[in-house]
Length: 180
Image (cartoon, rainbow, N blue to C red; front, side, top):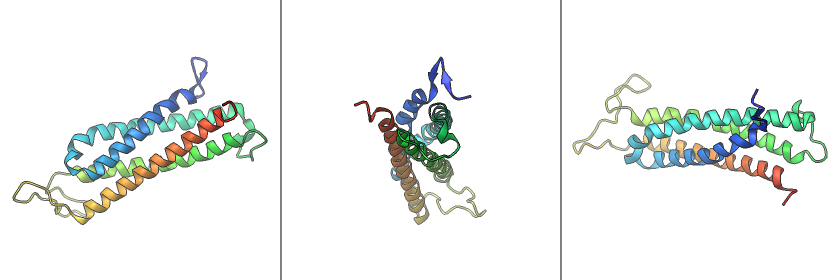
C-alpha cells in the first residue's frame, strides 16, 4: 500500500520530511522541557509537530519495509543478509529501533505537555489538589516533580533525536556509500 507515489518509491520521498521535522520536534521538546516561560506558547506547536512526526514515522517505516521487500525479498522474512544487502539490513534494523524509541518519546512528550500545562489547582493524577498553585507574585513554584519530568522529556527527546540521526545516516550510507 505504501510502496510508491506517481511511480516513484515513496520511502525516499517521505523520509526527507521526517529528517526535517523530527529533529525540529525534538529540539522544540527540549526547549519546552527547560524553558518554563515558553511552555504555554510552545504547547500547540509541539503537539502538532509530535503528531506530524508520528504520522510521518509510520509512513516512513511502512514505505521503507515495502521498498526493502521489493528490492531485497530475502530480508523480508527476517532472513540473514546476503552479500551486498548488509547496509540495507542494518538500516532496516536501526529504523525499526528508531521507530519504537520515537513512539515511546511521542507518548512521553504528549503526556508531559498535559502535565506541565494543567491549570493551577487542577486535580492531579491521584485526585489531589495539585501543589502548583501560584504564589503571591503570580508565579508557579518549581517542584521536584516538575524538574524530574522535564529531565525525562529532555532525555527522551535526545534519545529520539540520536536514533533518528543514526537510522537516517545508515540509510544514506546504504544508498550512497558505494557511489561516492
